[in-house]
Length: 332
Image (cartoon, rainbow, N blue to C red; front, side):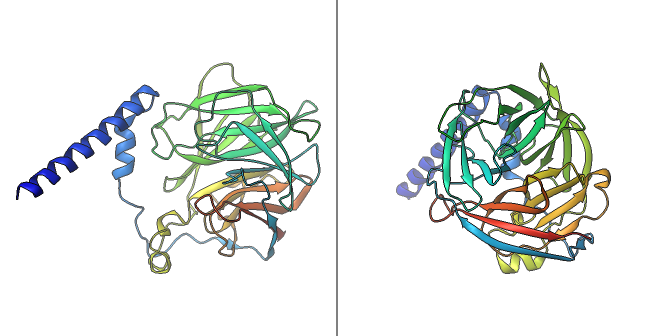
């Protein structure tokens, strides 16, 4: 009996200590540990019997392009097609990674790595390339927030380098922002130059919320909510029957890119991809069924090609192969 009491006391002491560390870390970094704890404890998304109808794309092809050669690129959490260098992709690691970008070919061959002259990232989750006043840039979304507790998040912008040799990159500017309705986790960001804004899509909300922030800002800003993406599915019972471990995550968006020519917003979830008309995101999107190819983390339109996209898959538990897949679309 005494042994049981001792073990119980040790368990309680351990739990209290962990909770103390959690709160201490949160407060010391400007986070909201009460909100973070609430997000950890809240239930999984409700299982629904059906979802809003979406429009299945007429035709598409998904094919393997190659494995990501650079072993230090463990997660490929963001992906962007180069503007200056046709056939080149930019990527980076997410939380726990160094402040650096990787350049690779569309088949995954390593080309160069570029340290960024900034403090260590908190949770880099998304990339995009864009052109402004004749100069091409790379936007880096330090917007991940698994606990939903960060006081503010930021987007870093660096010039796209002229060459593909290892060298450091300086910041061109940075946008720091908060959300009007409290912290949000996001892994999906894209630049809309015509609208002079950056689009951000929340990950763990149902329905997911689409926000915008200015492309440039001298001081911290509050993101503005544009709309809700009401057609993205929730898990149904079949999802839990197929894989109860991952069903709750299947339809969370993990990457997004914007096609300014056709004003199409392409996003990937862990399961499938979807294409929205940015002028009317409340209308049903095109549904692009995807094969089961592991945990997809990022997606990009191929620069200069409006019917072709590339999606990346991270290494399972940071081991094994990370891969690139091409999506060729037949649009209606």
